[in-house]
Image (tube, rainbow, N blue to C red; front, side, top):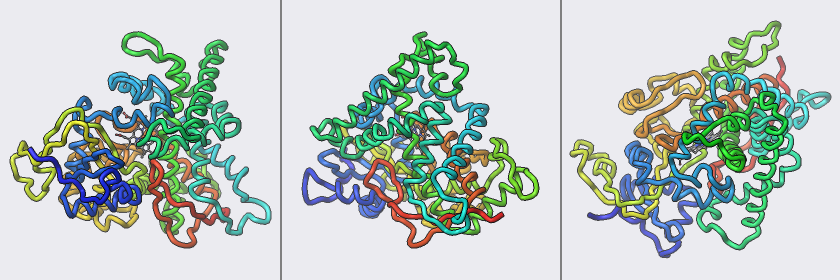
Length: 495
Ligand code: HEM
C-alpha cells in the first residue's frame, strides 16, 4: 500500500529541515492544508511521518510501545546527559518501574510540604536578587525573561525535590556544570550524536561530574544512617526496590536525579515565563489572581496568610492561567517515536472529512524505520476546536463557549477536568495534551502545576508586573519552546 505523501523539497538530505526548525507549528499547518493530517518530511536525511489532530495524537501516543518506540528516538539525546540504566537507556518495563518510584515523592502530603519550601525560595530570591526595598521600592524596575524565571525554577525544584544541599551545590559549585549539560541537550546533539566538538566533550565531562556528585551524596547519607532527616526524592529512591527485589543502584539514583532536573527545568521555566508575560500584559487577570488569594488565603488587616496546599487548590483563576498558558505555549511541540514495524494509517486519520468510513479502512502505511511525530500543539491551536485559539484567555476554561461545542463534548467525554491543581487530560485522543499521554505521559504534571502556581502566587503577593513593548515571539531553536529574551517591569505591590 502507498506511503504518506512526502513534503516537497529542493535538496534531498536537507529536506524540510529549515522550515521545521524555524517554526515547526507553522510548517505543520502549511503542510496540513496541502497534504492532510498525515505526511512525511525529511529532517537531515531522516524520514519523519507526522500525524496531526486528535486522531494523530491518538495514533502516535496510543500506539503500542513495542511498535512505536520512544527510546529508539530519544536515547541518543538523553543517555549522554542523564546517564546509563535509566529512562530511555533501559527496557520500557524498567522505565515504567522507575516512573512508579516517583509516585512516592508526589503524594498529596509530599506536595503539600513542597509549597512552603518553594514559597520561601521565591521570597529569598525577591530579597536577594530583585531590588525591591529602600528608595527603589515603588519604582518600576526591569527583570530579564526567561533568565529570572529559569533561576527561580532551578532553586525551587532542586530544593523541594532534592534537598538544600543539592540546591546550594547546583547554584554555586555546579552552576557551570549545569550549563555544560544544557549545551549538550540541543537538536544538534540529538540529530548528530557523538560529533568531535567541544560542546560534546564538555557535556560528557559535566555528566560524569554530576553523576559523581550525586553518588557521593547518596553514599554519605547511607553511611550516616540518617535517611529520615532528608525527606526528598533521593531518600525515596534509596528505599525503593525493583520487582525482582533488587535495590535501585546508586548510579541509577544519580542518573534519575539528573533526568528529573533536566526534564523539569526547561519545561517548567518556559511555562512560568510565558505565564508571567501574559499576566504582566493583562492587569485585570493580575488583579483577579491577587484578589483570589485575599479571598482564600486568610490573614488579617491586609496581610495574606502563608500559602498552603489546600488554599492553592482553591485558586481557580491561577489554575486556569497555567492551563491556558500550556495550551498556547506547550514547551514540547513534537513528540516522537520510531516505528519498529510497518504500520497502517487509518483512513479516518488521514482525511477527517471521511470520518464515517469503516474505522479499519487504511489510507497509507508508515514504513518500518520512520520516526512518527504527534504535535498536540497543533490541536491545541486548532480553530475548529477552540474559539479564537490564538488568544490567551484563562476564562475559557470556566466557560462552555471557550471551545466549539462538538469538540467540547468530545473533550468532556475523554478528559477528566479537575480544577484542583494539575489534573488535565487523560485520553490519548484529547486535543489538549501538554503533558503527553499514554505510556510515556509526564510524571511531573502535578509537581509542575504546584511549583509554577506557588511561584506565581508568591510573586504576585509581593509585586506587580507590567509588559512594555511587544509580546516576545517563541524561540524554537532549543529543545523546548521558550520566549525570546525580553524584559518585564516590576515593582513592589502597594497594599
Ligand atoms: C515526559 C511535558 C514537567 C519529568 C513528558 C512528556 C511531555 C512532558 C509532553 C511526554 C514526552 C513523550 O511522550 O515523548 C512536560 C511539561 C512540564 C513537565 C509541559 C512542565 C510544565 C516535568 C517535571 C518532571 C518531568 C517537573 C520531573 C519532576 C518527565 C519525565 C518524562 C516526561 C521523566 C518521561 C516519561 C516517559 O517517557 O515515560 N513531559 N513535563 N516533567 N516528563 Fe515532563
